Length: 137
View 1 (tube, rainbow, N blue to C red):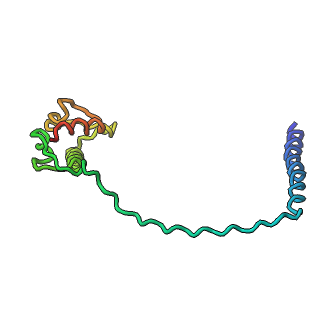
View 2: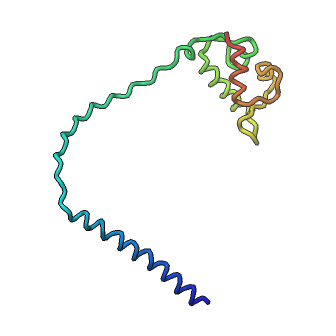
View 3: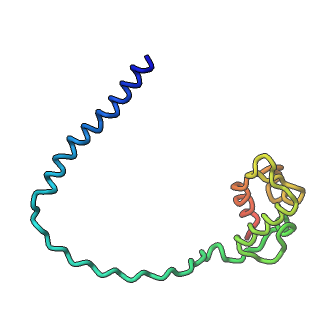
């Protein structure tokens, strides 16, 4: 039986080659036929590439906001842009090892952050920005 399967396998491989040879023959005949020559279209001049400019920050993010007393205990009392507040929050979270070890998207609140998070002991990083925005004026 093994020999019969081997013979069938070799015949199956040979069959596609023959079919490919038959298909290739008409293509060769088409290539040999003379074609009408087309005039090459003039190439368009390449447009000069625009230099990349530095991305401008959104003015709403760069506006200095005053943190509430609860948030000031974590990031400081001076007015800061929203982006800097989030950076300082993450620095505080990493410094005090408040990120959940199993699910890194969650933040475990300590006494200071619990006031900012509205009494919640654990908050996802996506909810954190929403809760922090309530403490900025």
